[in-house]
Amino acid sequence: MGTLNADERPPGLDRAHALDPAYYFGEATFDLERRRVFAASWQMVAHRAELAEAGAHLLVNVAGTPVVLLRAADGVLRAFANVCRHRAGPLVLCSGKGLGNLRCKYHGWLYNQAGQLVGAPEMHDARDFRVADVRLPQFRVREWQGLVFVALADDAPEFDRVYDGIAERIAPVDLGVMQFVRRDSWDVECNWKVYVDNYLEGYHVPLIHPALAKVVDYRNYDVELFEWYSLQHSPLQAAADVYGGGRAYYYFVYPNVMLNVMPGRLQTNRVLPLGPGRCRVDFEWFYAPTDEACARIDNDRQFTNAIQEEDVDICERVQQGLASGHYRAGRLCPGREAGVWHFHERLRAVYAAGDGAIG
Image (cartoon, rainbow, N blue to C red; front, top):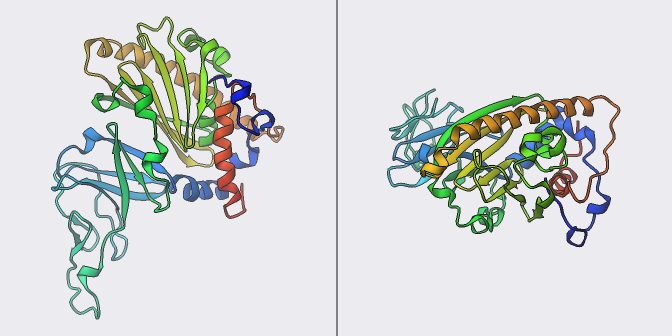
């Protein structure tokens, strides 16, 4: 949602078109995005409480790669490919606590908590094989404001550059002190970009979300564009039972992270592609440990779920429209769809540098 004044609009926005519908379909596009979008960016994978104590570990999938996050005995949080260097067996079968060294479940090769191989049963006859030469693939991991992120690619942008300025902008709200309350997931029959596109504009709010339109001040809803994220923000009105007073901040961090910040509350959304025409949206709620914030939890969930059902319905209908053969990339509204344009420009750069094939 949002407005962007004419004198603030970047070059190209006034003539912008949406993405060509071909990019919302096909295994070739899906594979390209998995490699060049998701594996090349910082992916939100957990919250700090899940990995607070030594031995706590979490098994996640990042862009098709099985990853194990481990809070080691030295207090350092590390992320490894959950793939043994011997013959690709798994090291961890599920998330949990109390993990020491990592032992492959296939042939028993043993790695320490720094990812170094320390034992390889019956390999003494292998010529020129040295245990000290073998290490697990390790990925960058970052904790920020109580959330945990992983980047698979060495050339992913620096985390501080991607999230620059967010914590300072929302102050005095402190996301790091908020406590995890609940996780919900929604499977949606649409391409992941359809769901992101919908999040990035408020053009649809008066028609699709009449209850939300009464809570946010649509006339004073603004959008700001930054290098790696866009921000939509608005004063809250008549929202005491749901959000409280103050201001709503809706951050979209490329390519698939959404941070919805209200006074005393953070809701994160993570959009995960399941295939060319399906995605999953993981919702997590965090609240400040105050009586006022906690009193709104039940109403907040009911209100948010109703909005999500409306979004799911329209996104699935849009996917059908994209597949109809009767849609060509339409013009974007400069004042209301700047966030969509910003997201599409990021993707166009990926497609232009990709392998050529789409669909």
